[in-house]
Amino acid sequence: MNIMEYIKYRPIGKIHSPFKEPKGTPIQPSAGKDVKGIVEVFSEYAEGLKDIDGFSHIILIIHLHLAIESKLVATPFMDDEPHGIFAIRGPSRPNPIGISIVRLDKVEGNILHILDLDIIDGTPLLDIKPYLPAFDEKEAVKIGWLENKHAHIAKFKR
Amino acid sequence: MNIMEYIKYRPIGKIHSPFKEPKGTPIQPSAGKDVKGIVEVFSEYAEGLKDIDGFSHIILIIHLHLAIESKLVATPFMDDEPHGIFAIRGPSRPNPIGISIVRLDKVEGNILHILDLDIIDGTPLLDIKPYLPAFDEKEAVKIGWLENKHAHIAKFKR
Picture 1 (tube, chains in turn green, cyan):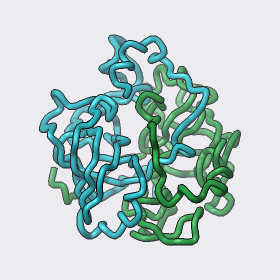
Picture 2 (cartoon, chains in turn orange, cyan):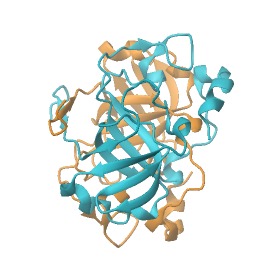
Picture 3 (tube, helix red, strand yellow):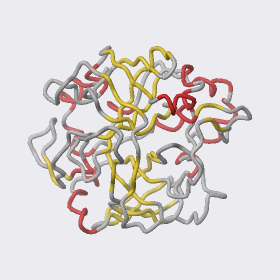
Picture 4 (cartoon, rainbow over the protein chains, first blue to last red):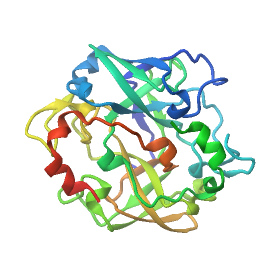
C-alpha cells in the first residue's frame, strides 16, 4: 500500500453503555469501576470469540466517533498545562482510536458482558485482544508530566 | 456516522526497523528486547510530540499492513490448537490493528528512537499514546488458554 493512502476499517461491533454522552463518562476504565456494559460483536464475527471466555480482561480497540476536533496540542483532564496529543490520552487525536482494558464478566453468544466501562453508548468497535500481563505490563516506567499528578491519578486507580 | 460505514484513518508516520519481513520478526516487544528502531512521525504531526520525552514507554498503534488474510479462528504461535481471533494476538484480524508497547530512548524532532522493537520495517503508524501503569496494568488477571503455556510465555517475557 501507499503509506499516504487512507486506511479503511469496518466496525466489528458496538458498545452498549449507560453513558449516553461525553459528560459524566469516566475517562478510563479504572474510573468506571464496576460499571456494567455490553459489547455486541456483529454476528458475522462471532466465531472469532471462541475461547475468549477464559480471559479476565480484554483490550477493546474503539473508534472515538464523537471526537470531532483533532488537536496536536491540548490540555488534558488531569493538568492545567497543554501537552502534545501523543503525550496525553484524550480523544481529540489525528486518528481517534481508543484503547480500553475492561473486565470480561460473561460471554453469551456474540454478546460480551463487561465491567469497568468507560465508553460512550454506540461507540464502534474495531478489535478485541486478550489482555496478557507478559506483553502488556512494563517495568521501570516513567510517566513524564504525570509524575507530579499522583493525587489526580489516584482518583482513577483501582 | 452510520456504524456500518468504513472508518478511515491516515498514517501519522511509519516505523523504521531492522526487520524487513515477517520471518524472524519478534512476536512481541518483550521478544525483541533491546532491538533498536525508529518511529518517524510525519512532520505535520510533530507538534503532537511535545512532552512525550518524559515517558519511558509508549504505546504504538499500527496498521499491520502485511496481514493479508483475515481469519476468525486461527492457531497462534504459542499453541497447537485453534482459538478465536479475538482470543489471540496474531495479525490476521478483521481489522489488522496492532498494539506495541516499546521503550522510548530519545526524541529528536519528529524522530523517536525506540527499544524493544517487534515491528516490520515500513509499517504505518496510526497513533501514539503514553503508557500509564495506572490505566494499563490490571490485577487478578486470568489468561485463558495461555494459563498452561507458561514455558512458552517465559520466552517472551522480559
